[in-house]
Length: 140
Image (cartoon, rainbow, N blue to C red):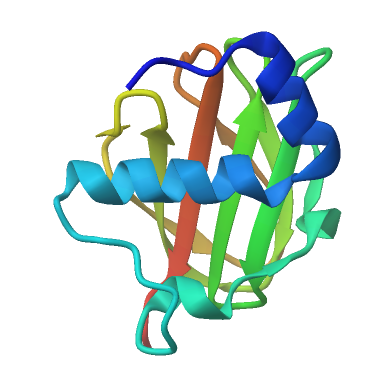
C-alpha cells in the first residue's frame, strides 16, 4: 500500500484526528493477520478520544492523538519527528507497552512497565514519519 501524501496527512490531522490512529491499529493488527473488529468483544471497542493523557515529550512540529480506556488501555499515535520521549500521566499498575510502526506493521519489543502512578516518560524507538504506542494494563 502506498504511503499517503503530505496534503492528505495534513487534512487527516486537522479534520479526522482519530483516523491515523485507527489506521495504525488496523495496520498493526493486519501484520498479525487478525482483523480489527469494532465490537464490544474487541478490547479496542472501549477506547475514547482523550489527549489529556499526553503531557509532553514530542519533537518539534510533531502531533499526537490518544484513544483511552482510563486505567486499562491506551493507544497513542505520533506523527512527525524521528524520536520522542513521550510523557504520559497514567494510573498505577503493571502495563504491557509496545511501539508499532504503522507504515510497515512492525512491532518493537513488548515490555512490561510497573508504574506507581502519575507521570511517566517512555522513550520511543527511531521512526519516520509516524509511530503508534499501545499500553495495556495487565489483569490483577
